[in-house]
Image (cartoon, rainbow, N blue to C red):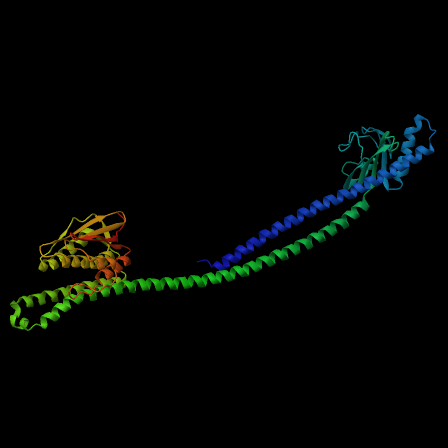
Length: 465
């Protein structure tokens, strides 16, 4: 069986790993986005600075050579581009028109490759791109021998539009620079190192926070599981106590039924032995025969209740019993008991149903009490009828007599201990029967009572069909 505490710890560890992975992804994504933005700003700064220097040199050259002929204009413009290149560590430079066609270049390339893939059609703003491992041979137009590797270095490639002036807006051409990117590479390295440090600090701080929260949650969860386990143990003990109380309650009700059943026969025996005439009548006398019958009833009652008590205490009464077998035995027993009173007990046909042995045992005690009360309430020559019907969940027994019915006082205190109006009665028979029915999971109810007789219904659970 899995330990709930260890299972919870594994769950928390898995959640911690997942949250740390998510945190690492967030920190890494944000750091990468910030790095690309900062790199782009550094490159744009370099391009704008180069653009400003180029425009300044173009303006200076045009002022110096204001009287130059139109044919010298392109040369003068390239001169301005060359002068601007001295200020920025330029490795190579060329002058192109706005479509990217080469006009002048220094150093001169071996062959112009035409428009670059990234070259804009009509640039209005300076453009820049950075190559961490650019080829110097490609910059200077040198050819490599077969099998030789190019010389790699960080390169910055900048394209700036040249204008006659901000107000005039006359387009003169496009200057194309290849600049040593070592300074930018060093700046990128410092920037990346700082971003990495910040990312590590952010991740460690977030991880510490997440871990602390989860550890706190784990401790709270452990304490809650401990309390839950204690409550579960308390609940188990309470269930055991309730089960014990239910069993002892049923046994107590059965014992009360036994005491109630013994009360009347013992009173009869007491009256017999205290009557002087009974001693003279001998075995042939009526009183003697009554005493013998009472003794027989006592022995049968004690034996019956003893069997029920033994089965109830052992918990071995869940075997199936057909209703016809149970009611057939009860019919024979109750007819014999009712015969001396001159009352006929009729049992209707038993339905096709099955009950447990416990239901048959406890239900038999209830049925004995109901039929006994009905026989006592019925005058000689009367009749008591027991009818059985079955539903999908219950077996219903209807006990009807032809007596005078219950009094108002008896109906008001139905199923509660009262002072009995019968000779030697205890007034607790119906209360005990009602309690036994509840122990069975069934019910006992009064259907009707009047001058024509009374009817009680006992409903007990049946086994599924």
